[in-house]
Length: 215
Image 1 (cartoon, helix red, strand yellow):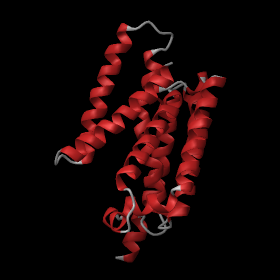
Image 2 (tube, one colour):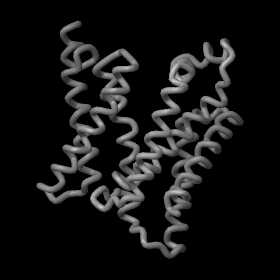
Image 3 (tube, one colour):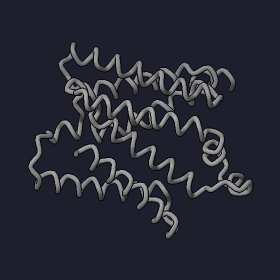
Image 4 (cartoon, one colour):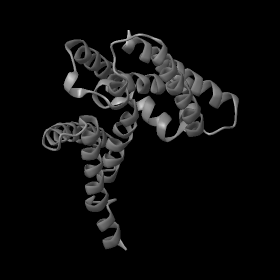
């Protein structure tokens, strides 16, 4: 029930973000911040009023060591669905993301693509709740892509590097949390941040050292 409610709310967040952006001149990142924080606050209020076995700390910061079979099925299902949609709509999504004007010019339904992306984002967030929680999931959504962007200009390689850095950071974070007796979700995010810093400094094309050599 919690996962279904979170997914439904995620879709509502995506729809509300798209509608407000289309109806006003407010920037998309501002709209997402307003809608996300508003629904997040509403969720916290409802959580305090509804009896549930879920622990608030696990929702906020995750509990990857407490993952059950149902959670694994949920995560695998969401991941598989996202991967299939991205592979099937890869070219259309690439054109829409990098050149929306060109996408409209060749007749692509940019409105549909926009909501597809937001829906995939909502599903990914819900699938990540058990691992790192709602607060740290933002870092796991943004950091792998940024890390991969510093390492390559090829989109296909970027996808593989982003996924690979996520897996590596997850394994390293879980392993480190045993030794420091810290939050597993936080350790995963710290490991991902460490990979980003390595790419930022030593990236072959866009790293700090490469930029200095080119200058």
